[in-house]
Length: 162
Image (cartoon, rainbow, N blue to C red):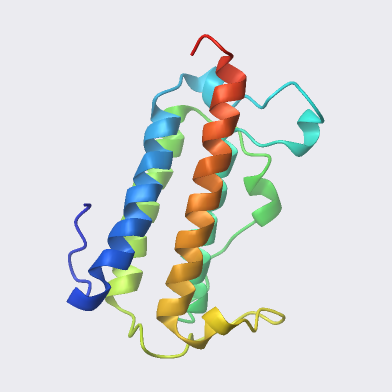
């Protein structure tokens, strides 16, 4: 399990799960070259599909939005639409992921997970927004969803001989 320094003991498992799945997404992007990591499947409607790098960039934005902007009330600038059109070298995506991971851990360490989130966005009044811990459960859900999406994308882009 990944290190969760600074996280209260009771919440180490949740944070470790989030980081494990995030690290798997990072490893998936790292395993490809720049062209593969930025590729989208050619089948269907490619304009509606996402590359592994776009999914990683989106997950980075999503994690900080919920851990910092929502839970702590400290706005983190984000252009969600641009996340889904991002193109960059793998090295740049890995640097972004490294910074996001560290900042996420800092956010969690500075958050009372039993408290209500500081800034729940309008229209997002869900049962899981009752506590900062619930918000992190949502982050886990989203990281898992997008990891699965990236795995399918990689498999389709790489073809049957993978």
